[in-house]
Structures are given as structure tokens and as C-alpha cells.
Picture 1 (cartoon, rainbow, N blue to C red):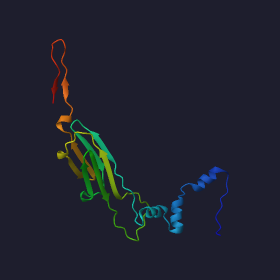
Picture 2: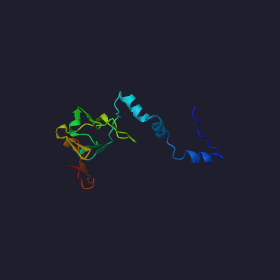
Picture 3: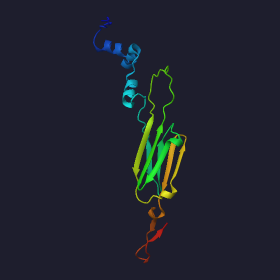
Picture 4: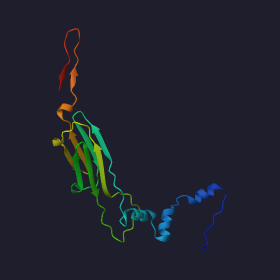
Length: 170
């Protein structure tokens, strides 16, 4: 059994001084050539180091359309699939891992790779023939216009004294 240095001092202040800047995972990597995060990634993915890629979406409604935006950095247009079935839109794709060499040594591995799929239920009144999708600079912009009959219309209010009735304006 190896002799470990023992530090003795007066209470918690000496312990705090000794442990400050101590990274147990870095020590494990140094001593054993073992990276627990790398091993965990391999166990989850069956040998490949992949993590679940979940893009962030923004969905909003304007007076004439539904607008979807998604951050998809590193996703190629050819790896993106958008389908509209009934009142359900599904956006799926993948971001491939980059080529790695056996001699590469990572100090941090925080980027996500893999496949994703997100589905949204749409309200009635989407003009499915006018949907527009664009992937530019890693951001997907998807515009689903509303049919004219479901777009809001302004109703002009008349007074009862003059006998005028409300009229609809487009």
C-alpha cells in the first residue's frame, strides 16, 4: 500500500487550502488514463462516443403565420427532414461526429452529436401549400402561413345612435 501524504492543520481552513483547485476527475485521468465521461458515453451509445442532440426551438404566432426557429449548428441541409402530416409537423435530422484520431486526447467533450426528432401539433388553418423552410448559418427558419379565412379580421364598431352597424375589414 502506498504512503499517502497526510496534512494536519487547524480545522477546516487548512482542508479548504488543500482541496482548493482539486479536480478528482483530472486526477483519475492522470493516474489511471481513465476518463469517466468518455466511458459513460461509450456505454450509452454502444461503443461510439455520441450524445443526444436536442436542438432549441422557438415557436411563435403572428397575425398571418406560425414561425418556427431552431438552432441547428453543424446540421447539413441534406441531413434535415421536415414532414407535415395532417395537423402534425415533424422536424428531424442528425449532426455527425467529427473524425477523431486514436491519438487525440480531449480535455473537454461537451458538444452534442446524433439524431433528433421534434414534433409539434398545429392548430387548424395552416396553408400547407405555402410552407417555407430555410437553413441559413445554422438556424432553421420555418414559416407556416395561415389560410386567409382564419386570419384575424378587424371589426369596425358603429354607434347605436346613428343606426350604423359594425363592418368587417380585412
